[in-house]
Image 1: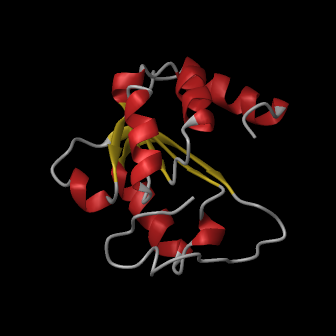
Image 2 (image 1 turned 90 degrees about the vertical axis):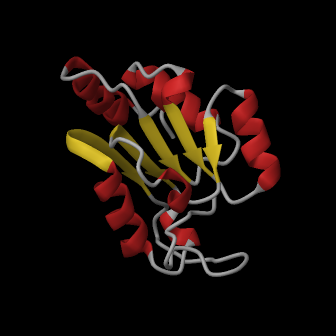
Length: 139
């Protein structure tokens, strides 16, 4: 996903502005794309917070040096992020607009939001209610 030339150009432009110091990735999965995005934005692993509902994936994210959390509720009181990402997660939640709203609210003014979704959009929720009150994502 992050190898696409147009996205790389946009990330380079974003990194050339105010440097990102922190990244929130909602629905980070294994963290492979998260690590690529963090590197493109110049964010060190300790500045990355990855949301993932799976305990096993949170463990893998922590092993990469990322802060791993299950839901946005765990981040209450944290300073806003300079960048946030929703990479192929919106088709996997009940309320995609709630996830987008939560990501926008988590980013500092002037920050960067990277959003990607599969097309054609085909919503599939695999377990539980995702995207409701706590806005935690599943990927």
